[in-house]
Length: 287
Image (tube, rainbow, N blue to C red; front, side):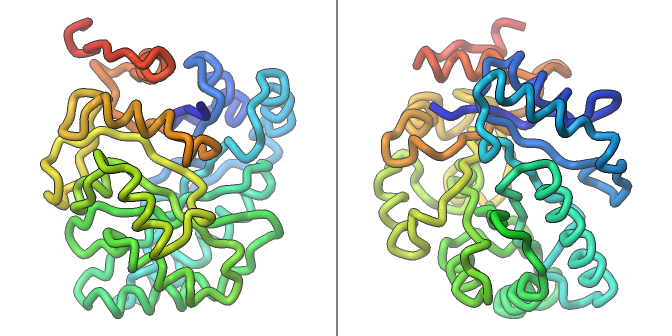
């Protein structure tokens, strides 16, 4: 099982510290932002302990492609209403892609964005236009994330992502990150995981699935709200999420936990242990 979680990236050890945090959880995968997801301020790459992080990953047998980078929330490739915002998104995404390459990661997860006050088709066309302007380094794959469908989000149906990827001038640089909470909230029945994979394969192609965000949901199926819950504390349930974590059809794909902190502390060491042991432990009662 390739399992990890979102980890912090902060001074003084930066990426090396991110790997140390993942190792402390018993993880063999991890996901991080290259800086604060809410702003464009970034440290120089020379400060980020990249070589030390690479050595630590080798020591603990964590493959480079199992370090996932997440693009910042403020990037909105679907915004056609404010050209200046769209241009900022394109420029910042370009720099994040370069940083991903420099760090030595392969996959960068990107929210497709929100069309704000226009409509879905305009949003999709805007995303296509934005992404087709990117100069993507060899080996980098942008993974468009499946979304819950709240507000004016694009990407809550597999068809949206298929339409975007099929219009890319460099389709080999694009794939998908499947978020279990998001697709549940969007209306997919994740309990029928094989059925979901069959539909994904028919519409997009399973060869395009590179990352799985493994999250429970506080909402009923189809609520289109996007509220993550800890494993076994939501409407999807531990048994389904554990089945997904161990499923042979997606065994080679890294699964990343983005579940909420509990009393200000990350639950990832305990949740990873639960998945490894295939046994639920109520972390809320343990508090």
